[in-house]
Image 1 (cartoon, helix red, strand yellow):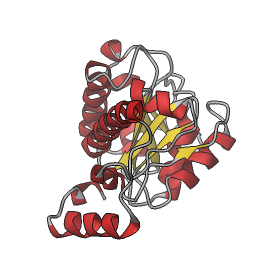
Image 2 (tube, rainbow, N blue to C red):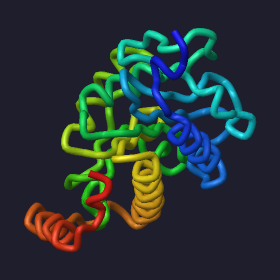
Image 3 (cartoon, rainbow, N blue to C red):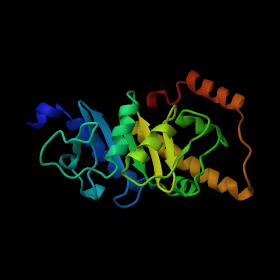
Image 4 (cartoon, rainbow, N blue to C red):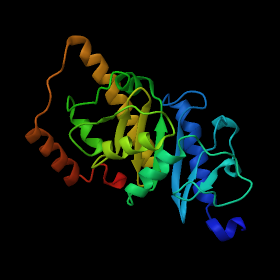
Length: 224
């Protein structure tokens, strides 16, 4: 089947995905060839390929799959080992258009201790709730890992992954990247605050006021 028949005109999405992938390492959110990104397309998703440095990746290297992992085009590269994670998150969240997975140092340090990020700072609300959960550990690339992450993302746009990293989703690739930057910043602040002991937390009423303020100011609504 010709690419145009199975995918339609996805050139812009391919260009955006490559551009955001290349920004991951430069932003400090990722290292080497770890991490992966995807964007929703008709019939499935585009996902980054396995073991290809982002600076070498071109739009033709991206892999088109349906949500069960079947290729939408012949002769493609091998998809990221985490393709299932991306497919399952997109399947469970029809409003999401992009998924980003990375291994930022501070967020991953917390995840290595199974620690969520609690409401120590009002900006935790940027991920959609009163905390940023940490999904339980499972081997990378497995259905078990995907299931843990899908549950941790209920009513959230980000979660940590125990002994692994970070996942964010958004209305587009830029939105997913913005949330990843915010979460990594919060993780760094939380780790530093912990040097003085457990920080006091905002309570449910205070966080409710933050969410209302965000809504009133339309803060982050482009990410929902």
